[in-house]
Length: 279
Image (cartoon, rainbow, N blue to C red; front, side):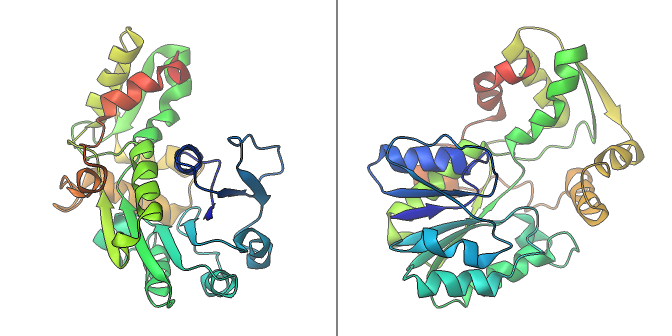
């Protein structure tokens, strides 16, 4: 049996569905109070990772835990979560971290994730760490202005990053959970090509069959907008990656293809699949 935390998110929702479709017993964990729709045969458990004891009942009988932490995980008692997993007999943990935990481990925004990685490695359990780069689904932040005005604004219009489809992250996670040959490995997950904000707007326009106006923001304009919903250290870390990515952050990783036996999906495929959100 596999326990999936963050089961209603961009990655967790697909991961639960993939595992269930392959005949695995799955417990989907989320913290929201609203009813959660899960595939037939999947058990749902409500828990809050900031309260590790709430996770305990979900872990009983589990072979492996997919651990997804919200944000950078700075407010989590990770040792307590790992103790609960060990006490329940969990054998392996698959941690969804972030590429920046490796490329910028000293940054204020990603130091907590790097620390969580270290705790998982030293837990005594089998472990695999997934480090995805930027998510294709971050483009959903453009959904409202595209629906209302067929226009978007973003900084660093022509700086490309290999954004990854969350469904590819989920499929990699499923493969890692179902096969123990990935224990002790850290996998870096990216898309198949560099994608700039201007290009992503064009891909969305193609998916909609309508033009979308693109305006380049200054870093200051982007900072002001982002601080409305992100803590300042996370804003600064994000702007640094978007505006001055390292060579490693722009590298196309071979890990998705190595695990799945196919190339990762480009942003245009994500846009076509999610066009309804922008209509």
